Image 1 (cartoon, rainbow, N blue to C red):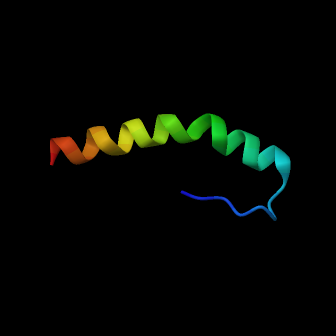
Image 2 (cartoon, rainbow, N blue to C red):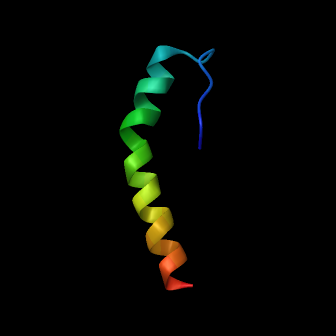
Length: 33
C-alpha cells in the first residue's frame, strides 16, 4: 500500500503508522499459506 505526495498529510501520517503493522500481518499470512 503506497501513498502519493498529493494525499492529505493526515492520511499520510496514519498510513505511515499503520504500514509496519500491515507489512507484519501480510508476511505472517503469506508464511501460513
